[in-house]
Length: 292
Image (cartoon, rainbow, N blue to C red; front, top):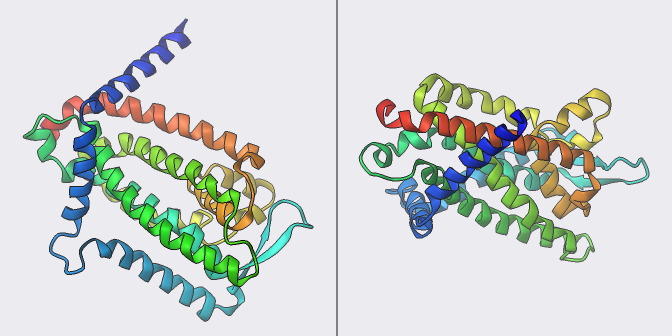
């Protein structure tokens, strides 16, 4: 009976968030566009800075690992079968894994700051708070999709230059991983944004740990090659799930259904993050106007 009450309460709270979005669809997409414009306002090349920064980061890592540390020119990928071991040049391996990272990093860091930087919608205008998190997340998704187009163009070139077919059915898994990527970190922002609005220390903590999070995730290395307890530990890193997922799409030619344990663990984390986000958002949203 108690379990039924908890489930009913969670459904009610989630429904209340969805109701906040009702009638604001057009405004959300318009505000997402304006958010991009606002972010790069005053810059000569405008939104192109959203590409310049990731491009420079990719160049730095390429130079450091492919030129500076020559031992890491190639990555030997092990998909669980010793007979199924193949080599990918480091740049291609890193490029596909780091593209979702750019979205993840901005979603965590900027997502936590969203309510504080858009306080005028909370204190001066009657605007549903959850939609602020949605349209700012959507603006980041626009940038991510543009970067994915660039990445896919490179992948086609990489395949053709290596005597492979330019397209694969596995590429379509992108439409599975990308929406999951967006909704997972949107749900995470339901917790982090209100908590950051209440405490600048929490916001600073998030910024401080991001560098460590990067190196603890399988962005620059192949986590499938780990064994024992470390392999299991990496399964509980959702960032690792997306880095591997994008590589499954474009490099490995493997389906997400082939990694049942990884999928089940992520599904449990997705549910936990969503429920926690619903709880924290509904617990704190009424106090936000006074805090901000």
